[in-house]
Image (tube, rainbow, N blue to C red; front, top):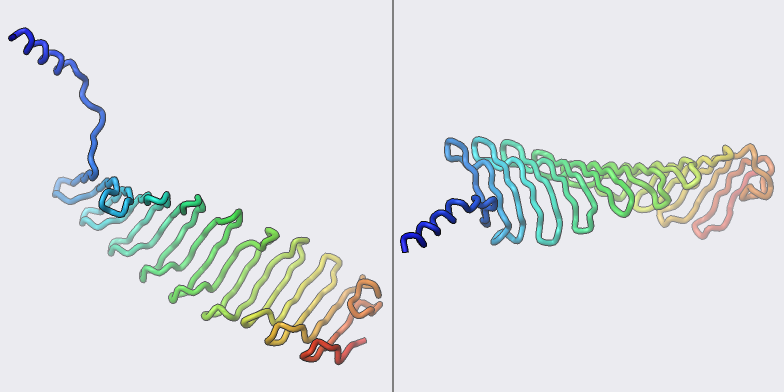
Length: 234
């Protein structure tokens, strides 16, 4: 009997220590007893596995989170606990970066979705005011927006690299385009989006390429509210 007990004790001593610690929540504290690192498996927290780092005062400053639906993110807070920066991958893998003001409202966002990048600047009310993105054809596009988002200006390059400037209020009101051949197009639209006036200037235009058949390449066309030409020069 004693020999059996001795064999069991020898086997227990010879067994290597376990390299695995299993827990649903792990808290590491500093010498003052303040929780500095909290690792959670997400049980009872909406399924969000997280790693939280806190400062010496116990204020959470950094957090790495993975939600149950696959959304992953990193969040950083200032000394007052206000969220200031968020880096995120959505469930589809699209990345984004948000910078927040002291009011915890997003003020700038960089994102990449559907193969196109976009940079957005917002005002204190959260409205988009400046957007730098790409057109469906892949060209660069800059938008300046009013506080209500219904008025603004846009600058972009067309598919062939021609610059285009647009002004709008609810819908496009003015369009200015410079083509590769040096021709300039200015179109003015009414509040219903109908073309009201068109100015074309092109040194290389011909009767076949000029909208009003002007060999000199310069023309001015005015239309009424029904789209009928009321004035044409020359």
